Length: 213
Ligand SMILES: [Mg+2]
Image 1 (cartoon, rainbow, N blue to C red):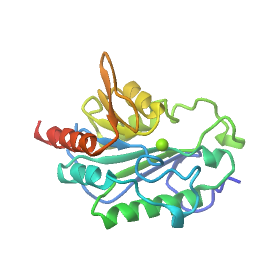
Image 2 (tube, rainbow, N blue to C red):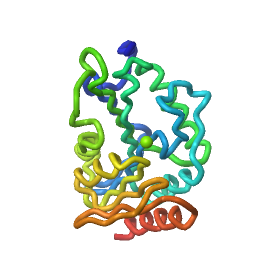
Image 3 (cartoon, rainbow, N blue to C red):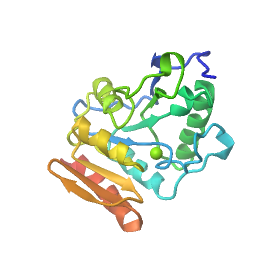
Image 4 (cartoon, helix red, strand yellow):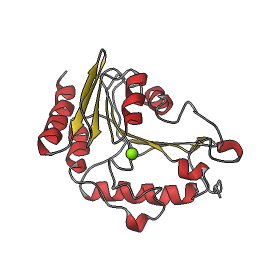
């Protein structure tokens, strides 16, 4: 059952928003948005055990590039496992803390974490269909924009699902990288594939280019 005990940073019952660290960013900075499961860590399917968390290859240099470039790093993660009653915020906190710890071991740091627990398969206050905070809706990205004064148009998103790309597009971003996916291009939004070392280099280059504008 959904655990709502404890001092969790819940902006509302199904929305976790936590500023991590104390690095300060100028207004109108672009952000690097990242999905978590399947993008930063290997997706184990509704992960609830910190001991089982492992990072995906190649993600540490991407986040480190944003850190070096002064670009805020923001995790935006759907966590319907909470609405579904598979685990609670306590387990989310433990798993997420472990992911941040593994990144820090590689000198890669996240500046804000947003997690959405809403899903229509849930019960109680979390049982909301198509909640504006749940990707593919853009609510978490817009919430981060309000808190960090981001320039969404220049921001980038990396995810492993089309819903991640759609959330980015609907938030007004112009580019996203799809893990193990296909590239595509529409007016105003381009999806780039993230499959191998060359794609990772391209993403790092795009992050570094943002810092030079
Ligand atoms: Mg994912």
